[in-house]
Length: 433
Image (cartoon, rainbow, N blue to C red; front, side, top):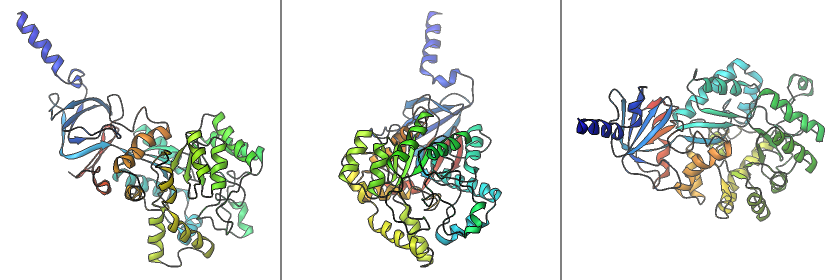
C-alpha cells in the first residue's frame, strides 16, 4: 500500500502542472526555443498553455496531459510574438494617394481598413503594436475589441491623435484650401505652453495609452518647412511634463538633432526616426535612458511608390523623401555601438502593413546582430511599451504570444519574413506548418 501511494504521488509530481488543473490545455512542441531573447536558445522544448497563458516550459518533446491539443512545431524555431513599436494601422497609402484617401474616406471605411491592416500585422507574427497616430479613433476602438477577445488582432498600445504645432507635422490643413480648414479637427495642434498642456489633456480624455508629439518637421508633411525643430523649450517641456503627470510615456517624432536633443532634455521616453543623431544626442539618450526607434523600413515604402510612379509625391515632399532614403541607417550605426537602447519599430503605414519584418534585415545591415534585432522586437519593445509583465519573453504566467519559423533567425534574420505559426493569447491565428 505504501508503495502504491508513493507511485501515485510520484506520478503527480512528474506530470505537467496543467494536467492537474482540469482546464483546456494546448501543448506546443518546439524544435528550438528562444524563450528569452538575448540569452542562448534552448533545444527541443514543450510549452504548456492554458487560459491564454503559459503554464510551464519543459525540456524535450512532451505530450502533456490527456486530452491536450498538440501543436507539433518540432521542426520549427519558436520565439515570442514580435512587437512593432511604431505603426499607423489606419492606412498604408502614401504621397498623393494618401492625401486623396484622407479626403475621401469615411470613418467607417477607415475602421474596416484599420482592422484589415491589423490582421495583416498579426499574420506577420507581430502580436503587439504601438499605434502612433490615428485621427478617427478607429484604432482606439480596435484596441478595446482586441483586448476583450471579440476580435483576434494584435495587442494595441494607442496614442490617439499625434500632437504638433500649427503648420507642424500633424497639421491636417497643410495643402488644403483655406475654405476647407474649418472642416478639419485641430484639437491636436498647440502653440504655447497652455495650449500644449490642453492638447495632451484632450488625448488623455480619449483614453490613450501613450502620447505622440512631433518636435520637428516630417518627411511626409506637405510643406517645405524642413526637418528641423518646430517647438520651443517651454512647449516641449509642457507637453512632456503634462503627459508624465498622467503617467503616460511620450514618443517623439524627430528628425533634426535640434528637435531630438530638445525632446531628450525634456525627458522624452522614445525618439522615433532620429535621423540626424549627433554625439550630443547619444549622450542625452544614455542620460535619459530613452529608447531609439529607428523606423528604417520607411524607405521601402518610398522606393516602392517612386518605382510605381515617379510623381507619387509633391515636390516639397519628394526632396525630403530622397534625402531620407540616402541617410537611413546612419544614426543606428552610431547609436547601437554606443549603447543606446534600441526598440523595433517600422512606421508601417509609410511602408506596407504585413511587411513589418523587413525592418530586421535593415537593422542587421546597419550594424545590429540578429539576436540584438530580435531582442529589440521583444524584450526591449515590451519594456518601452510597458507590457513586459505579459509579453516579450516566453515564461510561465505570461501571455501565450508565440510564433514559429522554419530556419534559424539567429543566423539568417530574414526567415522572420515568413512566419509559419502565430498564437496570440493562446488563440491560434495562423498555422501553416
